[in-house]
Length: 333
Ligand code: FAQ
Image (tube, rainbow, N blue to C red; front, side, top):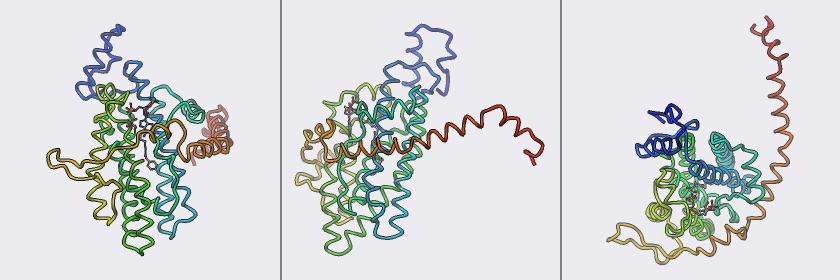
């Protein structure tokens, strides 16, 4: 916290500690790892941050599917950089979750055993090259809409991780938009490919924001704690309003006949979302759930030797003989 940190408060009385925590949240101060916090606040953060971290690393798969088939060296270099960024985002978020006392091994174990979720969006297949553009424009666009307010999250390490992530996501969104624009202005077949990708990714992108507010189990408490700053429906509406003029500039149509400007509300109305599909995907029945988790487990197993080597290296460098060697006169030469 920026002012009176709870550990400096000379009390172990839980209600006094909670009062200090509540006051800090009310004053928009940041809660830091060593500050006292309610167990439920810690658990909610771990749940959301873990789901977010898992989404970043599982989210590498749909786009990585196209790296070997990117249509030019320029597109390939951009795509590789983007997929590597997603891995980096996962690392920032796992590190931020570690500040809450939850190890990365534990979180990965929960992902691999299906006990923790990742975003529904990554259970859809990338069937054509245009899907890479649609993911950048719509999926990264939805991610930014959701994540910019998280830069003001009450938990310091999460908020700070989000600042950097959002900057990178912004580049991701623009490369997707630019890719789709090139296809849309290309041949008839390229335009049709771009339109088909937008048709398939639009509704799942709206589902990324989570269930409607009246069915969102965690929103009210998370907003009271200032982890979330806006409700799922508010952010979904913001995203729709942003996308409509962008789709027009792209020369593409959003696949929703009910989409129209509502003068009274000052927002676009849109058609009903298929929540049954959303729940099916969450239950593991999406088109790619099994494949995504299988690949993730295999990547983890294949990487075991890297983790072992890193641990051996760290142990070697913390051993006393290593300390002696660095004190050798030649070591500083
Ligand atoms: N998919 O009560 P709420 C990205 C679950 S990053 C799966 O409303 P909450 C970057 C929810 O966990 C994308 N599960 O929950 C990228 C809860 O289940 P639980 C990820 C979902 O937490 C781009 C239950 O439903 N972003 O895309 C989903 O208040 C391109 C009840 O829901 C984040 O994680 C869903 N769509 O609000 C990477 C952002 N929605 O835990 C690669 C941070 C809800 O009780 C390529 N997270 N659920 O078992 C958040 O802002 C929130 O967690 C929400 C959900 C908004 C996702």
